[in-house]
Image (tube, rainbow, N blue to C red):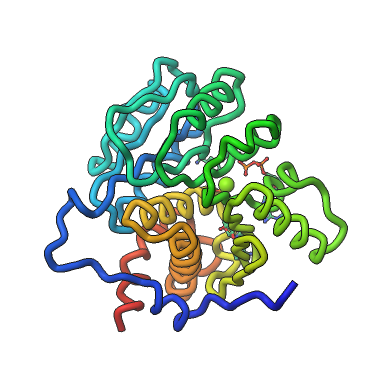
Length: 282
Ligand SMILES: NC(=O)C1=CN([C@@H]2O[C@H](COP(=O)(O)OP(=O)(O)OC[C@H]3O[C@@H](n4cnc5c(N)ncnc54)[C@H](O)[C@@H]3O)[C@@H](O)[C@H]2O)[C@@H](O)CC1
Ligand SMILES: Nc1ncnc2c1ncn2[C@@H]1O[C@H](COP(=O)(O)OP(=O)(O)O)[C@@H](O)[C@H]1O
Ligand SMILES: [Mg+2]
């Protein structure tokens, strides 16, 4: 493998597109976040809030019924659609064409949820980010991997990656197996960690922002919302993944002097997104 390409400020400034002066919510992209289950509704709240705070015009969350009031009250800017089932997803349906979809945060692995993911993959035509339990469900059902559209962004943490590609005995083997997976399935793999690598076939990028403050519950759910929002705003899947990972890490670098590692939480990432965007404009 060649040396990874560093994703630093110069690389990001070539890819970042400031919002146009004549923008309106109808052209800023509509992101759909599909997630949550009983006790894990916070995950999809975090993703949805991160998506709206990353600049897309509209965000809809699709959640089990028990999440309706939780999402509406937590984030009034976000619209909500619900499944028939109270506590988990069983059939994913919506009557608009999302510009991008993020799926998997907090959905669990109930059999009806697995079937819902399968049926969703059969009919989906929107650019896609797959995270968390949606990745775990694919690991349980590897024969469904061909249903994942080309250029989909997968965002596994190391355990989720292991479930997808199997165990490794060295960092080199981990990277080789991830590159092979990315090539076989034509997907972009965001290998979350310290640092995060973005694998697009043979081309590997290494993020340069972030610190251990990000090692906190919901941090990855926020990343999925950020990347899905950028995808909805017409960034290419590769640019959405690179810019999303960079901004996510940048929030931790900006906030750390005020919060310290300990009191930095996933909501701090969302609260610091504005400063991260502003620092790109300087
Ligand atoms: N507030 C919420 O509702 C939250 C819901 N969450 C959801 O909870 C479900 C379970 O997710 P989890 O990720 O906790 O469970 P997993 O079982 O997928 O992952 C936990 C395991 O992965 C290992 N792991 C994680 N990061 C690692 C790293 N960087 N290096 C090495 N090992 C690592 C841990 O040690 C542990 O063994 C997901 O659907 C997720 O989206 C979480 O995102 C946490 C917050
Ligand atoms: N020590 C660390 N340094 C930098 N980034 C980290 C560190 N630990 C975790 N992260 C980042 O935090 C996020 C954690 O994602 P994930 O494990 O999916 O969290 P969750 O599922 O709780 O939302 C990833 O983006 C990962 O790269
Ligand atoms: Mg996660």
